[in-house]
Length: 319
Image (cartoon, rainbow, N blue to C red):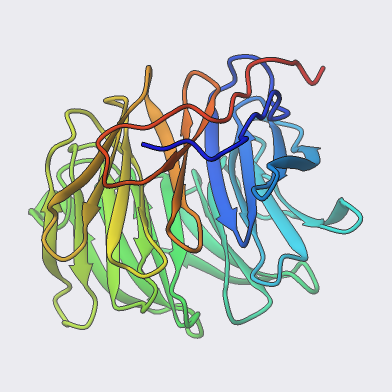
């Protein structure tokens, strides 16, 4: 892999060794958050650090609104915090979940935010008023992951109950439910769900070491591809913006980049420890990954089967 020229980020604003839980690429910015509750926003053009923040508890998830004006953070305290971006300040503390919040996503076409929690529910929030719009019930255990289709019409959830589901955003009605205990979907806890850019396909990742792609145009939700090279649980799956590639991150210390059309391998990025998350830049030219060693890494030229560490978060404590 080829490093970005001049990429020397000495401090990502995260405490030494803090496991990187989430990375989001939005426009030319990178949002990173760690298990110690700290996070930072970087302009990838420099790259230069733009802002830092602290959720207040162990951070599980973060998100950027489509217009870039708001941030969302969620964590072990059960809080979903909506932040105004300029100047950085808390807009709302969205309260309602009765357990840890593991995943949040903004809706691309409406003023709402979707959250998934250990209380076995997923909830939709109005970011203008801070009010709860929907509470989705149907999973029997922790809901680990959530996603929103690009047109905002469909929501997706993945759970510790070995199941994942799609839901109608307006009515809250369940559209399809894959039950792993009945041989559907995955044979383990589902840790990741992600839509492609068209909303027609859903990628999932699970404890069964598999990442899969599902065709949502079919009533039965047919499995199109199953990627089986990982040797440990899959923490994250993400499509590239054009939908041609998928990046899957795993406890096996690898991030694989593979083709959505046939699951053929494009790149394998080795890390020293478990990899918790991965995110493509909007142009697909850069892949950002977050590792349990507390380091952020950027990878370029994914046709190569290796990469370089470009961003370290281990040099300076924020306390």
